[in-house]
Amino acid sequence: MNAPLPAIARTRPRVAIVGAGPGGLAAAMLLAAAGARVTVFERDDVVGGRTRTVTAPGGYRFDIGPTFFLYPRILREIFASCGADLDAEVELMRLDPQYRLVFEGASPVSVDASPDLARMEAEIAKLSPADARGLRSFMEDNRTKLEAFRPVLERPFGGLSDYLAPEVVNGLRYLRPWASLDQDLRRHFADPRTRLAFGFQSKYLGMSPFRCPSMFTILSFLEYEHGVFHPRGGCGAVSEAMARVAGRLGVEFRFGAKVDRLAFEGRRAAGVEVGGTRHAADAVVVNADFAHAIPGLMPEELRPQWPDAKIAKARYSCSTFMLYLGIEGRLPNLAHHTVLLAEDYERNLRQIESGEIPDNPSVYVQAAAGTDPSLAPEGHSTLYVLVPVPNLREGGDWAAEAQRYRRVALDRLKALGLGDIEPRIRYERMLTPQDWRNEYAVGYGATFNLAHDVRQMLHFRPRNRFGKAQGVYLVGGGTHPGSGLPVIYEGARISTRLLMADLGLQQGVTAGGGHGAAHSALGG
Image (cartoon, rainbow, N blue to C red; front, top):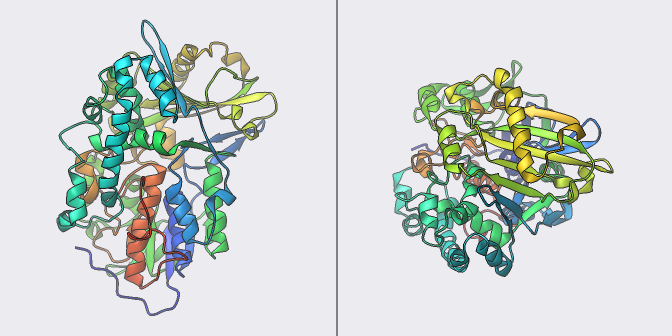
């Protein structure tokens, strides 16, 4: 087991953070509030990583990655622990309907997912009147599941002994590793389309509901129990607010500062090296993409549990093919979020898992300017189009495929009543899996990081206190508890608690994030 660092006698220990993504920003806030001198080294010129909003020519604004905010309580607690108020910094607009699901087939059906359970029962009845009766039992079952499993998501896993804690033993019985998410949903819903309505959220992890562990039924539960939110100005507004609070706490941001490697004195982290210059630190928090960054940042002998060969052979999420479109005119009949679910959904997933690019893919579309006019010029709209595709583990020449697949994606929009969209495009940007890898430093182009199967969760995932080195901590989707913004924020709390204990730091303003003070990771 990795022994903790000896307490640092210096009043304000120095912490270097590699990357200003959501996990790095949360860690910077918490550590600065606890009294550390924090410097964030960011390779780009803005904060947020993939959780950023960019302004394109013509005045269109797009989220690059995440497009909605789920379960804000964790971040509210982090802000409060730093003496700030999330809701005073960012306007979070709760959506109803949360999204529209369009099921293709001989008789296409649209379902507007509503947090109003009575209305949602009526929507489910479009698919199956019998399944509508299963909604309340689904909610109650997942309320219990989340309450029991929450302690597992709020603590680090350093080894097998952590599984013996009573609250972990109780929570793990809800993991049901023998059952997939879809199989678990069969206890409530018979129609496969209804199960897909409550299971497609596994795509937030880049996984199939037919392979994703059953515990992740809590993802759709969270949407209905706690809401789906749009931050006014885009999800990047949340990252910018986190950076503002961090700055008020004294965090220093260095942009255009790509960290070449971590510096060590023996097994102990001593800082980071940027452009041949060493920046000393008592501890280092790594928020860079795990598969892309770790092989270059740390020597293998300091991470025997994750040598290069294991990182190369690990299981990764799917990737995504992206179109960001500025459109002349309004899109009045399109929901804020729409998911087009292909009739051959299972075949799509098998194609992705086998490394084959889907020929008739399911598609996610965000048309946010109808809700938030600040995202487009007057009289114009934005479209964010996401198509799940294989990651780069199987190769794939996207330089050759990109234009063909652009045509596929645009043709799929016809099923949403957008057959006339192409002549109205005034701005266009495309991202392929190779672009995710090359432009955004995403390992294998796997936009949702390491897969979340049972063999890559809990202590099998790269640990928050990482490797055999002293003073190296991970945050982000590549460590426990995993991917998704609320989970990444909780992971930052776990990692910073470990770091604070190792350096003898006290918790911040209100001790947010401790097992007693933090009410929940994903609910409650």
